[in-house]
Image (cartoon, rainbow, N blue to C red; front, side, top):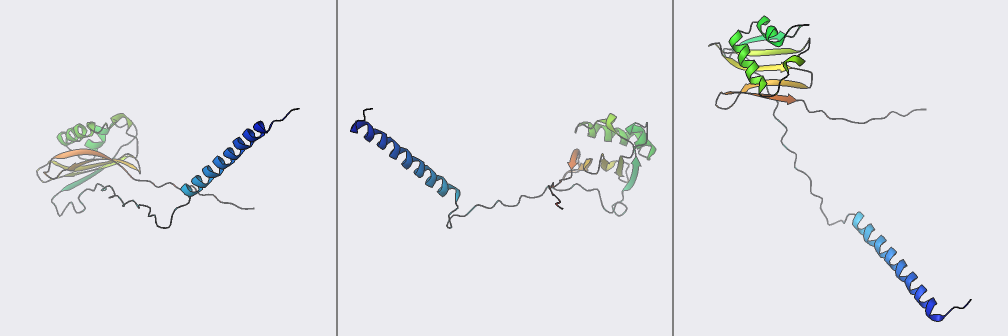
Length: 166
């Protein structure tokens, strides 16, 4: 085997350059990961929590009549409203507004409840339909008094916990 000095030099040079490149990359990566003392991490401002919809808390004081109802087995939603004492024109108004938020009338299940607040002139003031503990449909007046429908999904925080033992 014949080794020339020129071949050894080139191999040695390539080896040294490779080692220096690996060390440089390691140092740069380490500096990028380790936070500096003078750097400040921006803290996110707490966002304003969504406003929970509410019916009038003192309906009698406001001159409102409050009617409560519940969907029963094999009972259409409109029948449940009429059974609760809601007049047909108001029930139609409720149905019309709920259509705007893609309310599925066929998905009404026994045990789901609703509350309607009606003013002294017999017009709908507000309405709430509880589809579940977390999901509800609302019809509320806006700032000008016009009714609008919306949905509400109760915010949920999820945690993963584990219990360890012997």
